[in-house]
Each structure stands twice: as C-alpha cells, then as structure tokens.
Length: 357
Ligand SMILES: Nc1ncnc2c1ncn2[C@@H]1O[C@H](COP(=O)(O)OP(=O)(O)O)[C@@H](O)[C@H]1O
Ligand SMILES: [Mg+2]
Image 1 (cartoon, rainbow, N blue to C red):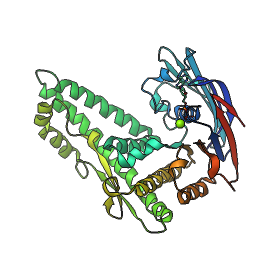
Image 2 (cartoon, rainbow, N blue to C red):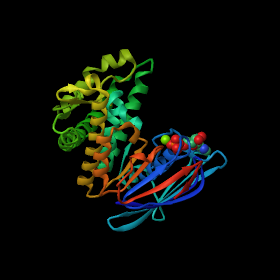
Image 3 (cartoon, rainbow, N blue to C red):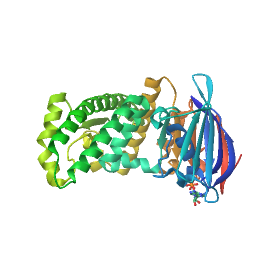
C-alpha cells in the first residue's frame, strides 16, 4: 500500500498544508522544531487512530484554533481510500473512513499499515520491559483486531482487580471470578505474542546476518510466566499469588509483566551490547517488523523514519536505503547529505509549519 496525499488543517504548527507523496522516498528536510515529526505524527494518527506523542488528542490542535482536521488518501489493494480525522477542543475525535464514521477505535487500528522508527525506538533495546511489550503488542494489534480486543478486555479486568485490591475489605470471591476470565485472555494473548515473536525472530536472523556480514546472530526470547501453561494452570497461578497481590495492593502477576530478551551472539544486548550493536539490533527488529507485516497482511507497510539517519553509520544507512528502494517511506532529517545516487526520491523543505518542494 502507499499514501497519495495528506491535508493538514490546524494540526500542531501547520495552519493549512498539503503534501502529495510519491511511491518511493519522501524526504522532509528542515531544522529543529520546524514541523518534521509533526508530519510523521499526522500519518501515524491517520494509520492507528491515536497519536504516540500525546495522552490527550486535543494537544495536537494548533494553539490558535479549536479544531484540527487531517485528511489522507491512500491506495490499498489497488483501491483508493480516504480517512478523515477531526479533533475538537473538547477532546472529541471523529474518524471517518470513506465517508463512514468509525464507531470504535479498534475497528480502525491497522487500517494503514505502518512501521515507525524514531530515536525513541532505541528504548526497545535499552529501556524498560514495557517498551518491548509495546513493540510486540503494536505488531500483534496490526496483525489482528481480535488481539487488540482481547488485550483491551484483559486490561479492563486488570484495572478492576487493582481497584478491588485497594479496598479495605478484599472481595476474594470476586477476584477469583476475575481470574477465571483473565486466564482465558492470558492463554490467547500469550499464544499470539509467542507466534508473533517467532515470526519476528525468523526474519530477524537473516537481516542481522546480512547487516553484519555474518558476524552477529540475533536471538529473541519471550519471557512470560504463562508459557506452556493451560487455562487451569494459569488460573491456579493467579489464585496462588493473590496473597502477594493483597500485600502489595496491586496485581503482581499477569501478561502486563511479560518481556522479551534480545541476544546478540548469545549476550543480552541490553546489558552487554555496544552502542553500535544496540542500533544494529534495533534496525534488524524494525525491518523484521516490516517483513512480518508485509508477509502476513499481504500489503507493504509504509516506513516512517523520523530523524534516525544521523544515528546510523554509513554502512547501515546504505543497507537501509537499498532495503527501502522498492517501498514507500517517509523520512525526516536535518541533514540530507546521506542522499546521493538515490532514485525515486522527492525532497520537501520544512520551514515553520510550511512545506516547499
Ligand atoms: N499544538 C500545537 N500548536 C502549534 N504548534 C505546536 C503545537 N504542538 C507543537 N507545536 C510546535 O511544533 C514544533 C515542533 O515540531 P516538530 O515536528 O516536533 O519539530 P521537528 O522539525 O524538530 O521534528 C515546535 O515548534 C512546537 O512548538
Ligand atoms: Mg523531530
């Protein structure tokens, strides 16, 4: 799939702007704080239905306005589609696909397939387990709407359980009933996560070898208390830990504690990897992410590369440029000097919330 055109109205520092994309590299060049990441954010919002930068949707509305509108056209399965997103200062958001209002956000997630890679992505390798979980969950959600719904249902149960655990008198009976429901979700979520991680690993092994001239091999291990447990065992595990939950006034066990360990040549890259190895591992993971979505969804995702070229050395940049040659990408940078002998590229200048060819 690929994007054709995006219109922004009162989105962040853009008052009114339009961009026509090419089905190749779309390079946005500009100094800091001129609006490059805002373009990436706008595309992400259209693709996923919410921003990755804000908690409140209304923060994206231009300071001088009460509403903002995004309007994107894209080709999927050879058919042109349109998504409009309107957000007002009461934090109300409307998502309209091909003139029909979307009822639930979960119906929209994954409508436009994307893979995003920004300086913050390094947290997947360096940061807390939650960053790695989000990385895996984002792929799972794009692969399957039912996964997203399962996950939402599980999180609702977890929230309720935590509320019950904070009360003076603990309703154990009720928590046991919740455990029954949660164990059902856990089995399915763990299974889906495991399959997805296996698929990512499968792709990552070859990419890492190619990127490092066979010097490094990557391994990813899924860490969960629930692997290889059946529903009864999961329920028992949750019940058995209830006394600790009560002591801590919060649920200590669950898929909200899962993690993945990433190894390069058998060493945990988060603990022992060099800066360079961490970056390579991340690039590998992101490209494996791209491959998995492409294969499973039978669509080519759109690559959003926000300000990462300055973080990569020339070997990795050349690898990446060669890799993205046949796909659509949206790349932002302050310095376009890495571009020479590149075909199929359009360069747009970003200046104070305006775009110029
Ligand atoms: N809601 C908003 N209304 C107007 N301007 C905003 C809003 N949110 C952020 N900005 C401005 O957008 C600019 C940052 O844009 P960004 O795309 O992150 O820059 P960069 O080009 O460095 O990626 C800043 O100047 C910031 O003040
Ligand atoms: Mg930026």
